[in-house]
Length: 264
Length: 91
Image (cartoon, rainbow over the protein chains, first blue to last red):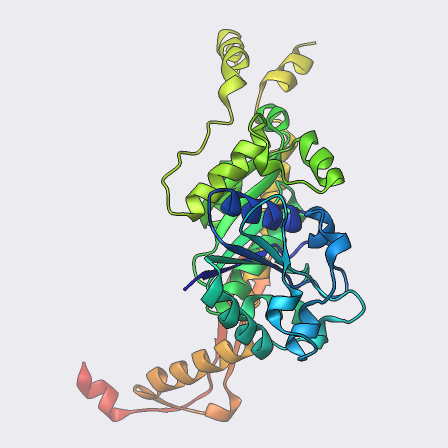
């Protein structure tokens, strides 16, 4: 039996879809059978991020309404063995699927896949309730901004109300230079406020823009820091103990200088 | 010049502290918006406990969360109709 994980955030634009795509590609590259489910009905995007937009025939609403069988709607990635996508419908709205149907769908997928990763829409309405209905675990994505952390806090409360306890946190787009200058909240600051376990930290990286432009996953890039960060997240999901990379490693010189002139 | 240097090298003057403080305040308020259902349960429990000691007017009971500034208080207004003799005996 597979495991159903929902990727959520509350606020839009913090990197839910990118994180879903990279966790999925990461797990598939490590030999797992993965189904990615785009639950953002009406605003589907996971297909373009994965570069699979030209291969959609059926979507999630076709499956739940009985227009096609689940197997027909699942798109198989040609580059990564084991990676599959169930795309969202683009012309319907969030009410086209019910939480009950989502639970049924996840149960079906669990029989065949090791991991089912659900890309949750932004917001806390029906789309959110649908996305979390069939999930067993939750990942909350945030960025080091007041608005994103506030929404993450709200989402953590709503996840717990839905029975998804102990969600794990991904901090996205952290800029080490700004953290060092004291102009961006640090990992510790955010963990301190939200009081949940950390799954991983993704540094701000231009390569994510570039790979997304091409419809590729940065997790497969062996030389980038963001790719490494996503690989670490993947391994932690698989149950491995991976130490958090010390992101403050370049701090040495400034720290010494600060000490010399007697400033904190 | 010194001010510039201290801004450059000190962590304390960064805008992240402003962000943290604002976030902390906002969350104090956000987190207290508990569901009406939970408040009803709390009310029922309160009635049960207080009724052990005094006779209260259950219909006029009011329980609310009051947030002002950066503190939150649970305010309960429980009209008492009379004391219970049994409560005295217990002590």
